[in-house]
Length: 441
Image 1 (cartoon, helix red, strand yellow):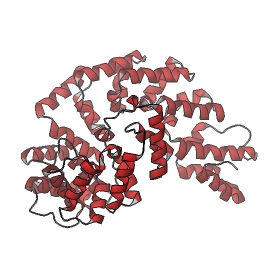
Image 2 (cartoon, one colour):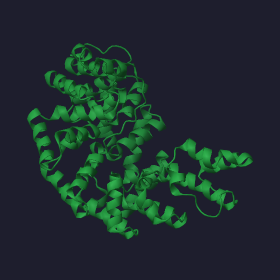
Image 3 (spheres, helix red, strand yellow):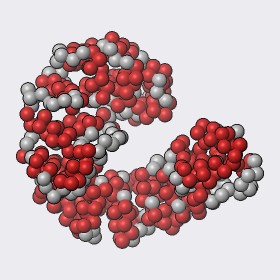
Image 4 (tube, helix red, strand yellow):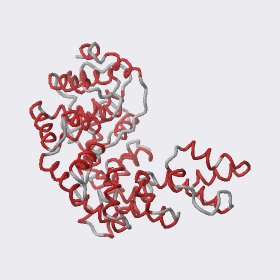
């Protein structure tokens, strides 16, 4: 299979990919680890206790602890303490435990003795040292979600094989190891191999289906070093050719060309996973926002992820912007120019509008005309840069009126520093402290 692909029409690209050494940020699928204990069913006291516990016991930030508390909640420390103590007794370091709980918080409400200890003992019986066990579990915490027995053993062996630098052991399940070897040879990074392994559909299993799916994804031009390659392999592996064509036909009936559909698929492979009803609902909801059919198609071509947003979420986004002083026509302009604005929470939008319009005194019209600004990080871009501007204005170095918002926020970091920091001689160290520390002197 590998030689077939390697010598196919994409052989040059594949050779290039095999030699690449890139840093890939692996996004865990949060829904795979969602807790059965919804925060909606837990008292505020329990939620507050969970946040405090996560901050004090694991050293997590309050923001991260609050996010985790929406996935799992508890009202006393007895069970969580027993889980943490058990992990510590098995050689897990504090940083590893924090990583495990951040990824798989439900572990804190499992019974340490009847559920967790037998799993750890089973994994140690595979011949792993305590340090190896801790390393593997901290890399892929979902292994502890598996039931004790054959399932957890096979899962553990496969994860350990992926982490090995050398050849994979022939004694392991043949197809799984063969497929992992093929993907590794194509240049798929280790962390993405993990994501394939923990998938519910496990597209690294089987032979013929895997070969067909991989060949198709490679021929579509997906880069094996990127996350989209893994996403595309998931979709193609799970769906028959007939089902895929039916999904394509759904988009065509809504006005997209077949080329449009495959361009959308290249941007976001999961676009083919949604039902005709859901896709139509998104189209109709965008029309309710004031967009005509041609504009709706343009938005979905630019950001197909809008499809997964519910009707309620999209309409709530409209109301959020209206509440911030944006007219319906202005919102229509914003969504046409920057469809991603649908994805942001009301809290995030309010925070950015309040800071940029009320505190920095930039006109609301600037955000309407350049809506990409609301996609920038407050902590990493907006606040540090604005603090530099406020420091310069307080010293009378750039006048008493803000420079255009585009010249402050749209440019690259090096351009911003050259424009507003490096030209100020003796003040450069102080301005850099302000820029990197997020504080105004």
